[in-house]
Length: 472
Image (cartoon, rainbow, N blue to C red; front, side):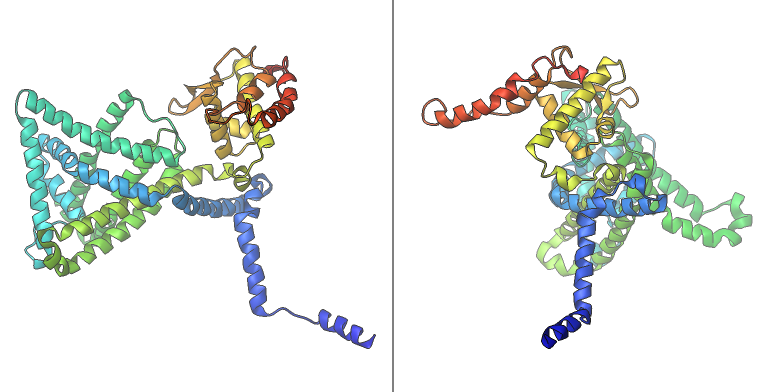
């Protein structure tokens, strides 16, 4: 008895070690980040706490999706496409700049950005040779396209086709991150891509012009030069950063074939622009070691670093796309872990719920609902909503149409007479959706199993034959 009292006393006085407490706290923190935070309703939180939670969830979503979407492989694919398109792309830019008399400006700005210069330093021999080869290829492309007759037409078409293919590949990757299945129409591609081609030389010339003005204030600024010269120096240093942020903001805003909010695009551009500037500084600084590779690569010593620069630049840009997507949709991914392991019954229930919402909206002559509006109306996470809507389209139950508020965003209407859409009809469509073309003998060898399954389906098929979705 005395021993038992002693054991109870020791148990009450027991204190876990610091290492044990840290381990428990770490486990609780991981559980909070992976589970609890995704089940919190932001409407029940204060504004400050809600912003904090959404910021944490945005970072988690971005990091997780970088791995799930394999952005590294996508960046490598875009690098390959960029290498194929770099000469035609620069040829088109130089042709536009030449038409306005700014060819030398655009040329010097582009090559200085890539770290290619006309320096006579031995460390830049590989860069100079690469720059000369690229310039020769560009001039040959322009001369080929400048001729007359069929060959000139073919040359222009090939140049534009190569550039458009690059932009199309960029759009596909952006749309994949934004979970948009349908890209731009051919007409919109032509207009939007042409505008982008014209926009890039303008930004390069604008960057050069502002830098020139700030470096040489002139007579109008002479009075303020002594006072403002430190300010001018700082503006010149950060001007390339602002230009990159502006370009990335417009890219994140308009390249995906969906509506992107300006604030989310700007935040992503600030983060990606900062990372690009840091990486560009490291890239340019790293070129001082390029002479070590001259013995191996010879005149092509600059190519490995250039390829690395292009791939990591695309990787950073794609992370920015994912960040803008996560920031805009973070509130719609609550219970996201559960939707990845949803039961068959609840998926059928959500499918019925979403289809009913679309039918009733159509019946009441309301504007067609978008994915976001359906997700909010039905309280279904956006990721699951997107997957169910894709399935309903494949079942020929709904069809897309441009929304009234934003033509770039698709809305959905019933694909058949709503007076024919019963609960029974929808359940049959769900049950039979997908391929059944398998070499399995359900007539003889596996008849008993197949018949048992069909017997359980009788109630599934026979009930609610007259209950219309519009009447639910």
